[in-house]
Image (cartoon, one colour):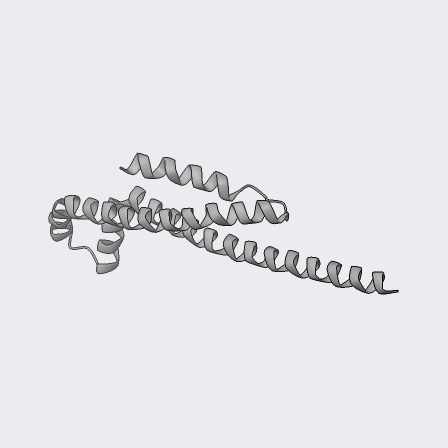
Length: 133
């Protein structure tokens, strides 16, 4: 599952790194895609956290035996436990950032749509005023 989620993260990352134009059609299409990616990254985040927890659970007994013998401080113990699922935690962090980036880009899409609507309104209003004279 780690490899599958990592591949999906790479695909979403590539999408998020594309600069879009400010044309309404492209903004709306991107907004639709971003909404799907937001939902998907939410599920992916839950899956990655489950994966990380499972990894900790599997390897924690072995680590506890080592910690008990070594009489390590709480801080060192936590660092050791975190290192057990380093790849899984990286994935959790990455998916969290992808989800946040989708949110920010969707906000930007809303801003562009509002801008385009206002420009259209002004153009239409100015056209009416011009035709009256």
